[in-house]
Image 1 (spheres, rainbow, N blue to C red):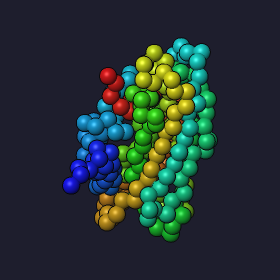
Image 2: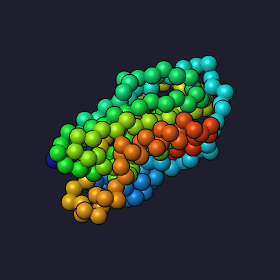
Image 3: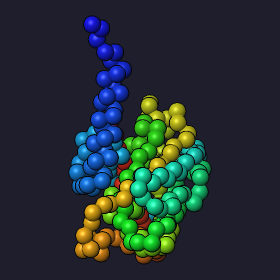
Image 4: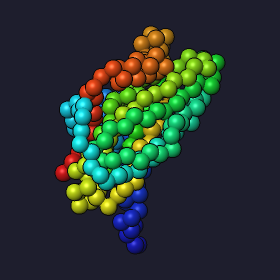
Length: 215
């Protein structure tokens, strides 16, 4: 009897990883962060200091934005811009939009990933609406700010320097079987986003998180 091809086991392993990611994000953001720390999948394992004025590179990169909702979540979720072109090292602000299309308050949690994966270690963003339980009331909407930049060191990296297009993708998952207390304690996505936007406008320095480990 012939042995299964190595590609088969690669697919099996990939499916297992994706299943683990989905289960962890649905039930425990803390465990999900630990999982990402160990595997490099979409986790926050480095932190850069807050930066104000930077000297951006003359070379540019185009960042695409993607938004998804998992089955069972009656939300509209989309980026306000399909893509932006920016210089390496230059912070930029963009917005995502979410709306609860149901007649009840719903709590959801988002995860993200950056592709191509070789660019992830050079992608920095503020902590915004990811890995936290966020709620929207019936018919309520939120305009969520996001500030990000691509580290100019990416230009010098052997594996990443060839890329000039990067995609940031978010997926929201509905949080089920929550008690009234848990729903009440969830972050108000609309008000919280407004406060974040105000703080960003009033601050000359922003703290960024990195998405993946760097060799």
